Structure formats: structure tokens, C-alpha cells
Image (cartoon, rainbow, N blue to C red; front, side, top):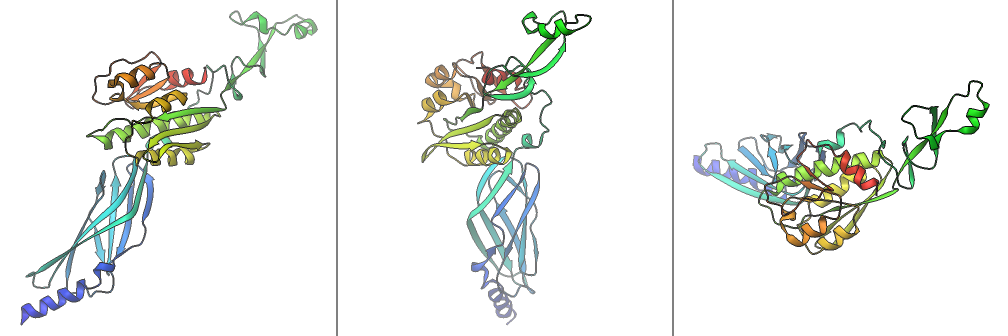
Length: 331
């Protein structure tokens, strides 16, 4: 009789679980943030029944689920940057006497977790365009452009062609003054994101990739450049127009959730001002040969690249990217 009663409790507790609803199906935060969503189990009677819950998202550290009043709170701590889709929830119900148990597994395909790289939080560098010379937009820094940036006294190392002779003639002591010109940057820079090979450790590589592109894109935006970020996907060559950090974040998340595709490698490299890819791509002879003619950021990974050009920077998270930026904007 007790077994029949306890099975009845188990039945009443689980009859509405199939309609469990996810209260928030899109979460966004930065790497290392603790995020959570809640699942409402339905109208079952849970008072006499014990429930355990676990969830799974690839690349995300799950904390212990909290269950109260028919709601399951699922906390997450993201370890890798990128966009993660789909949530699997496993619920196990046990009767009051712990004689029987029933497992329900529910999938939420429309769940999305967006994890942004920490490089987007870094303050912009104070080093703004001192090395830049060519382009269409003023950089707000000294350089070799045509517009006047400032006037200063002549120094022994100053270029004599910048002396303002009319001002010297009007000066009582004939002090020498020079014209300081403003540097310019390109108004538009095309950044190609190339993922052309299969990787067993893709999560860590995409995480470092997002950190590198986030750092590069943020510095270029800070210089006053607009970006076009391109990458290959199953639907073709995708182009994202980027004018601020929000656009940059969305482009990175979209890239991270796309599958690797080598069909557009030549086209992508050819139309980009700078290419971001991995060291394993440089193991492919055709890609290595084409890439050697372009400024590129090569994301560090275990590989034996055929050739790394003089215009390339291998990025492992610690390197300065200013030499790379100078090669791109000083074209």
C-alpha cells in the first residue's frame, strides 16, 4: 500500500513536467560572469517529491541548480568566449520513500548564451595614430597628412620643409616655428576572419580568436576607422559592417557559431586588408602562399606552419598588436 501511495505522489509530481518552460532563452555576459536562467516545471505537486537537476551547454561551466516552488534556477559560468546554442536539462524525481525514480530530459534548441571576450572591456590605448600617415579620415594625432594639427618651435631634428617662413619673418627675434601636420587613417578597413580547418580543441581556439579580434577591432575603432568583418559560412560569404563595439561583439558572436568553411579562403584573403586566422591554416600550402602577401594576425595553436610572412603577427594573448595595425593603416 505504501508503495502504491508513493508511486501516486511520483505520478502527480511529474505529470506537468513535459510542459516545463524556459523563462529566459537568451543570456549575454562577459567571460567569467555568472549568468542564470529559470525553468518553470508546470503544475505538478512537488512537496513530497525530491528533485535533482543538471544542465549541459558545451564550453560552459554549470554550477549547482537551485530548485524551489516548482522552479529550477540554472546558473552558468562561462569559460570561453563565443555563442553557444541549445540547452539540455535533466530532471530526476524520486518518490517520498526513495523507492522509485523517474527521469525527464528536456532540450531547448532556441536557448542562446552569448559570452563576450574580455578584450572588449580593456580601456582604449593612449597611443593613437602617431605612426599613421595615409588615409581618408583625420586621426587626431601628429603625422604626415595635409591638414594642420599644431604649431611648435623648431627642434634640431625637425624637417626644414615644415618651417613657417611667413611667421619667422614677422617674429621680432626671428624664432623658427614649424607646422605639425595631422595623421590620417583609412575610413574603411576590411577584416577577414578565416576558419578553414577542423579543430579538436575548437573552444579554446575560438576563445583566443575572439580575444584577438576584439582587441584589434577596438583599437581600429578607437582610431576612427569603420570596419567590414567578413567570414565564410554555409550560406556564403557573410559581411558585417562595424562602427562601434556593439557591432564588433555581434560580428564575433556570429562568427563563433559558424562552422569552418574553406570554400571562400582565396576570396576572403584577397578582398581583406587584414586577415585573422590560425596557425593551422598556414599549414595549407595554398593558404600560406596567398596569406604571405597580406598583414595577418595568426592565432596561436599547436601547428607546424609552412611559412610566416614578415607582415604577420602570431597572437597568443600577450603580444602588442600596434606593429600589425601600422602595417594595415599605413598601406
